[in-house]
Length: 335
Image (cartoon, rainbow, N blue to C red; front, side, top):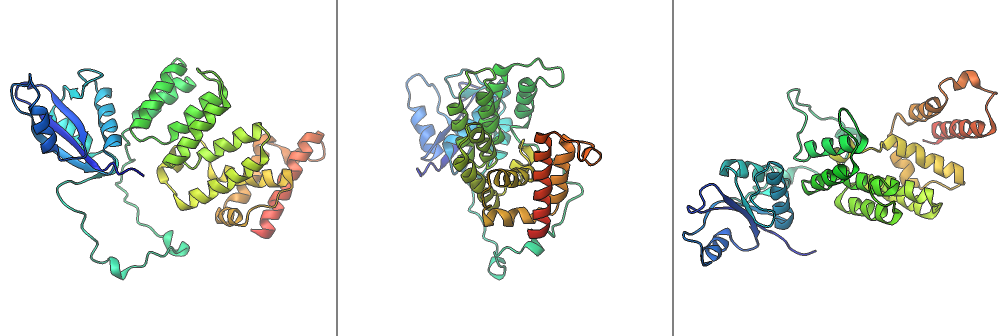
């Protein structure tokens, strides 16, 4: 992986009192300011008013530029100058995901040597909750909500796939992982774009790379529709493996997939195709204490009065109900 560690900087120039320049550099911001000040046509030198060290200066610059552009502060699309108060720009940089302080090194926890890093399922469930804690406000939340409104035609929004696509892409620049899956879904369904399973798969794969393990669930649906059962089973294994390894509360909260649904769908897939379930997946499913009630709810979801209707199903209905009842019995006995 390329080392892209560097600085995000904010420069000011007395000859341009209402503008600030926001850019990136892998050198020091002071060196960059001196370099720009030498350019012919700049009457006064640039001054560094703020700098921030980050692990990926390219991604950080994209984030800050997108935020400022959304606020209508960009002077020109092909320039790094913004008409905004310095304090406002600094606040955006401070709130940037994964920002690191350029003024001091991270202090090590002086108690770290006394604590174990080993997980303990029985103890991990005990956490303190702050009653005054507010719902987190992510930089991309507003864009994500607008994108969904245009995509699905919610509220007073007139459905507009082009606008939805644009907003999903902008939210990605601000760190929204779930947008990868939504864009993939649009290609999968041909919503505002030419239908393309290949393009859908590319977006799902990129979502996985960025950390949205539920994109595997979208890949599963895609491979199921193409009757590629080997890939379906592999994607299930990778979904459960990556969720366990990279569990992310934000991914869980903002994803269209539900883990209990993934558990139920996996068991259904195995029973339907007479495939032996992976043991490591079964271990994860066994952690879901409500999996049996969830399986029962899947039957009632399709047949609200299925208990009263027992014995009068069509052949296809009987297969569905029988499979789920068998799954419930199996889970109760084995998990």
